[in-house]
Length: 418
Ligand code: MEV
Image: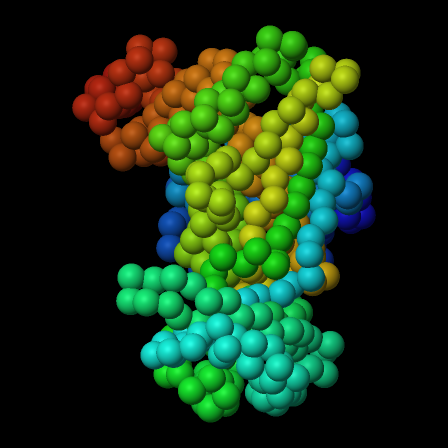
């Protein structure tokens, strides 16, 4: 199957229909399909009733830079995948998502303490920069052979509650690795030399998860009429202004962004905590906590969204290559390098935020949530097969989504032989 074809009505297909599409789209082998469906601890038909677009891990069709992607998401919250799919469909009207990213440069920090003259020490670090880089780059010849490695050295004197300290930083192009291992090894390797040239005592030698040199960016235009008209566009902008002005709302706004980001990070076997830490620290950079996305209106009255977020994800190392499901998910996305993967993830975060803001600014999120939640409650009450949707629909109509009511409805339906 061509990777450029639009996958419309994906969510309407049954489990096998969706699996077949993903299989053809990503050239999965029979064995990979088998792994995808059997490794999950949930029974597949049960999972299919709990969350949308199930294929073992849930893929969302997104158009990015003119190319179609199927993006697997691993998440427990039922409405997230449907919301991302819906947002992705709306973005297509104006060409989908457009992305870019920086080089995959990670920062390693080396903390130098007990310095009587930290400013002289800082200058000394810069003077010996080449030697420090040389030492760092001896640690990973394979990374160097791929064109990566430590690129430059930084040094800052910081005031702390225990006096001034020197922070030496290595800026390392990690290519397709997430990079924490690589940069930690380098930081440990140069520590002795840094003690020697500064006269201080090195304490911590560790990656920074605030990966400001490894950013992924995405933007999309959402057609005014598709979004629901001028009033909906303005309401979304009001919702965004609320997040910009108030940290209590902003945390939830960013949580919505991270619903999308974390789900793909997890599906691809990357480090969700590193990404979460980096995203929230980036949102607070400069001292005020900001939304990770920005929303504006263009001269045609369309809604325009953008996102910029640290994105330390890899395609090699860690669980990305060793966990079979993560490996298959990465294959489904089909990113050629870690930058492309990061850009795809940023686009999903933007899509997710759009979907949440649109729902919140219009009918509220509970209607959609309750419909999906009701299916889970119906399953808990013992409903199977077609009865799940029947019980769920009745509970939503009655606005009584509870296990005891689900059991009553189930008994009634069974008595009627339905
Ligand atoms: C729920 O998981 C995410 C939302 O709360 C995000 C938001 O409020 O923007 C809907």
